[in-house]
Amino acid sequence: MKRRLYDLAAADGTRFSPYCWRVKLALAHKNLEYETIPWHFTDKAAIAASGQDKVPVLLDGANIVSDSQIIAEYLERTYPNEDSLFGEPPSQALIMFIKSWTETILHPAIAAMVLGDIYRRLVPEDQPYFRQTREAMLKRGIEEIDAARPAATQVFHATLKPLHRLVSTQDFIAGDAPNWADHIVFGALQWGMLTSSTALLPENDPILDWMHRVLALYGLRES
Amino acid sequence: MKRRLYDLAAADGTRFSPYCWRVKLALAHKNLEYETIPWHFTDKAAIAASGQDKVPVLLDGANIVSDSQIIAEYLERTYPNEDSLFGEPPSQALIMFIKSWTETILHPAIAAMVLGDIYRRLVPEDQPYFRQTREAMLKRGIEEIDAARPAATQVFHATLKPLHRLVSTQDFIAGDAPNWADHIVFGALQWGMLTSSTALLPENDPILDWMHRVLALYGLRES
Image (cartoon, rainbow over all chains, first blue to last red; front, side, top):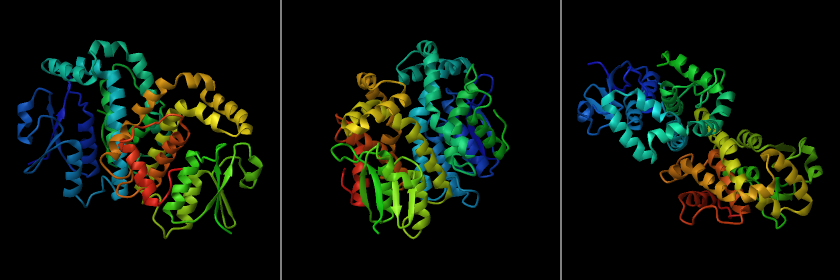
């Protein structure tokens, strides 16, 4: 049976989940073929066999694996002959700083800009769930978030400074080739760029160039 | 001749430079003995032989090396049999993200709190130089920076989120043992803690525990 990935989809089919993007890049990194199954926030029943209710969920033969970090560790363990996702131990630990930065700083900075745009892109049955969970998480209403977008955009650009400087001086976050660190940060920005109603970065931004290098290396399309 | 390091000093002798702290930890990491020479911002003549005008400057036999990153690379090359500062290539590249984050995000967040405290701790002859260069850098006067300290303190705590989460789940930034990534971030926080007129972190903060682990491992004192 072909490898399959449950992949969060908007009403128009756009696959925008940062965590699913991480896994798609990790599968490409490991040279593994797969097909995606579009999934919506309220399709909890479809992934019940994974024992939890969020995507990504990977079906690989008899294995059902969820949570992007656990999927990456599963792929590294199961396909050790392909390029490593993590590198040797010091590298693996350092990636955890980049993961922590992405999830505690970059994700909130992106959500503060595009949360309303995401809401408006969802299938109607997902919208009440999304509004309720995200407003509780961010402690603000979607309309309030929309109204504060100019300030959030300034914060977003300030947040990107370390990445901007880094990818101006080296090809990938992990150096000469991307690894799980690149996948994690790429997923976050791809999430923002695929859902935002405005361009998040100017055309000649070194961060965009880095994203294009990642896609080109894995032979992936932009969306 | 004994290895010597020109080390920035306050009027009371406190050694507070984040870049000098990086190098002191790197020297300890490489098991290298050295003595420090206290230096002030206006002692440009004392380090003229280094071909530039900032510390750290390391004198190692006939070699005079300046710039903390270049010193670290010099130590790694010159003392390859000791523990590596960088690890293998993927690790070395990942450290550059942490360096970039420290210098573009963490350093400015700390400066926004303690710049006035640093100014007041300097020897009198350093004060006009420090005021002029730092006010130009930050585009604000020292008194303005002092007045905005409560807001800056909030930004500082938000900035530390990724580090806080990381060192709550692993012993060092580089995993089971510290490396140059730990040295860089430690230097920044040590700079803030040694100069601030108020406690920067609560006593039971996991970041403080990590700093104590770093010092203990290298057998170093707190200041």
